[in-house]
Length: 422
Image (cartoon, rainbow, N blue to C red; front, side, top):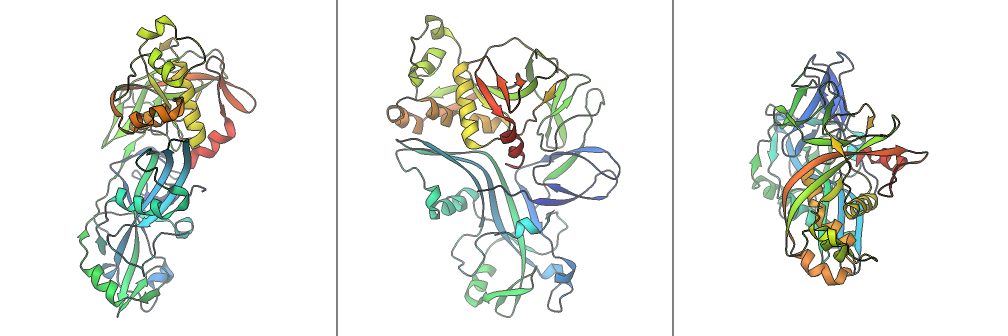
């Protein structure tokens, strides 16, 4: 399934100019005042479809205060399933009506509307009646169970959702007699008497604004921060610091960099994770080698070599993500690192540390040989993260790929470019 990037209407926090951003945008410069800002999102985003002028000017259209907003959960991310046979993966971009109960007359998803219409932030001042959404995991599980291509793995396997974007989108309606009317098209859905009564009995809520704009300047030295539009972490090359929007401020991020051999090398971000594993004997490189059933003898020094899990700090297609995580975790790189940010180009950080931790179990499933012997332990595995540090590894810029010769790992440039809206 191809990813869909929603368009969100905002207002510049500096000059008040209207701006429209992709949903992945976290760092931008206003095209009117040129001031850089970064977006801090607390919890999941809350959006709404706004009515156009023709919709509002329709003779039957009510005032905004008479609108009812139906909630829809939207999930976008990598979905992995592990069974006795294999690890399967796919990319999901789905939406589902977020109401408990049966409402056969209501649209079950957003369909293609989100591709054609812009969204707005829901604020405390938005008028209308908003219904309280049902629990997101339960709604998404129902959608997955109805799809033949998204079967749950059953008791003998497990599933993981990694790099997901979860948002709540409200669509406006109003009632006219015993009909529910789409407030965007001003067209009735169906005769709605019985379902209308059930809607009246559903609990309402008041969605609060959870999006905060922060100035894109370094809190330490006042220098302009740098980053791509979808960067979760911003770089200050003046004082060699990294910053992450958190609540209403920028928080410093621990990191280290390898030393590039050439000015053309590209700095690629990875999460280096130390975690406690309960339910599987896995505390050293030797344990990992035995889990993967490597076709070579386990070296004595591996028995005392501390084990770290690695995952990409950027979103990319599920197959490539799993391949890179497995290869680099098995390679256990230990290059010389420092805290100076080189002037080389950096691949933006678009995957947070907690999502990288969540990938550990599926990485182990990808490495385990034979999988059937280890699967019961993986299902009950308990992972306790101890530390996660951002590490930039220098990759050579070759014709079609970024390549790390020591790890024998490559990243296709086109795949990386196409991952910008995952």
